[in-house]
Image (cartoon, rainbow, N blue to C red; front, side, top):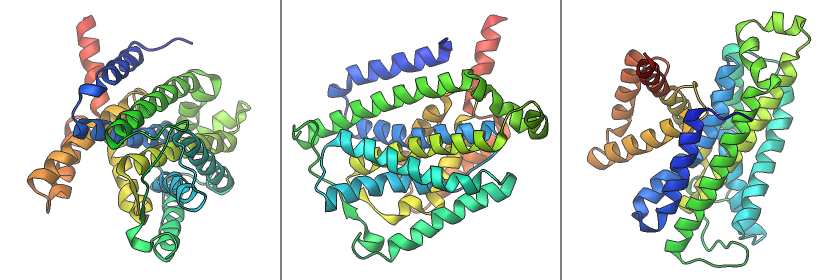
Length: 314
């Protein structure tokens, strides 16, 4: 499998950050870990965008992964991080598989709004569930890994390391997928679905497959977000959360598998700074940044890096 130079650099940066993680401030670890969780969701959105589709309800699987972690911890007393991660990805993937039979039939705005509808249905169920804390949600603390109970400082480093491993594995998997015949089919379906069908390809099965992959990635992201923040609530599936993921996808661009994580990290930094200086108007700051990116770099931040690399060759 041939790796792009940008992906090799990204993997090297992740390894370097993990190597110095014991000496990084806790708030930096938190921002990067949460950016990794968000980036996993956006990585699935990037695959949709290459198909010419946009999901406005990807928070459904993000929340499903988080609540799977929380419910296993709260009800079944499962505290092992690895088991919770695997279970969250599987449950989110199973949910995506079942919904995919319906969603794969739709295109354009119908696909986006239908995915949003399912996300809001889950939100309505969760806010009415007193067992799961209703609108307040519930906390997830006291996690373990292979029987070891880290202290709070060690736990942040452990979660950071697991996030790095999951992100690197996801990057390699999606890179391999995009270079495979099925991955090359994504742009063919986006450009001319009818012609792709005449060539023997099944657009419906391809969309269904991508829907499941995106669901699993989102489930992993939700599990990480639940563990690093220590709290789960229904807002994780609210439409504004899905909107943030779409924002990050637009911010980063779809030119590389690394772009979603770069966009997620920049989004996290902007959000932290904006909320710190103006907690009542931070959404306006995010909106201004989005408008600026669309006007200056309509293909996302990754297009700027691609232009710089092209100019260096001239």
